[in-house]
Length: 367
Image 1 (tube, rainbow, N blue to C red):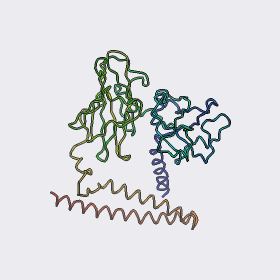
Image 2: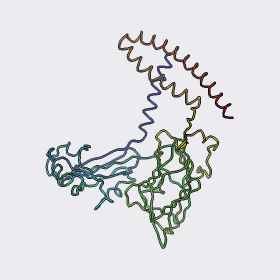
Image 3: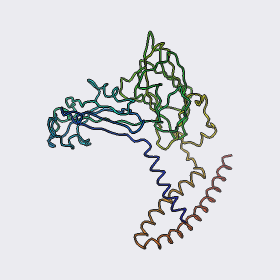
Image 4: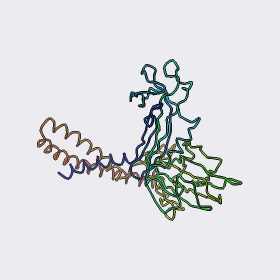
């Protein structure tokens, strides 16, 4: 039974690792004239790069005693985010500097700015001007793909950007394709993190999405002016993305996020020669997936049933064994756990046989 206890530990470790593959980060700093302490200074470890998702200006409640401008020692709590603070997306004035200065860099430093608090914040409760800022960002490395490079990733979110980003494209004529495959339980969102496509006489750079029978084209008229925004949500489970650059000179850049709408769904992004022109998924398997408006209940596969049952068994075993360890002592607890597993495994086998028989009966009736 020792192997079962080890498996339980490994199972929980793998769950923790997969959930923490990429987490959003935040950096806050107060407005003032004390030097770097009044700068936003986000950073990423190793060779990872910053991707700015949003910048906010915030004001504290007057009752905190926090100053609008710090010219002396700073109370650290005045510069820390609190959900009760007055918050507004920083999208005016020199807001572009915060994205341009930091996107694609391993670290950056930029001074905190202030604005008058917006109308939705009560001026009798909050300071008249914002007194600190918060930058939300991600750190990416192997999640970023150059669409002209042969590479495949199953990370979600994943990112693709032009060669040399955050520098502009230097090739004068390029055409590259990526494909995205999704499991039947998810769609994907394409978010323009930084879309700065250039034009000469016309929009000479474009991104074209082909999704089932629909086609959507994005060019210089769709530039996001540094503010991340969703530009496309898939309707099927396979799509291709064509990048075309016919500018004829250096210019233009892009950084796009690919993210599954279902965190547990599978998303595969392939570019270069690894990109697909048609889905590798057998279409005959898709009817087993949930369909919007479908009133029938799809039966899980034997593998899915076993996985769910085993997960419940392991979770209950861990919780109950901890309880018994506390009440009975570890030797008695492990003896009890051995007996409990022996009984539970037999229950699983009996359940599998019943469900297999029921599935066969329903398949015969359907035929």
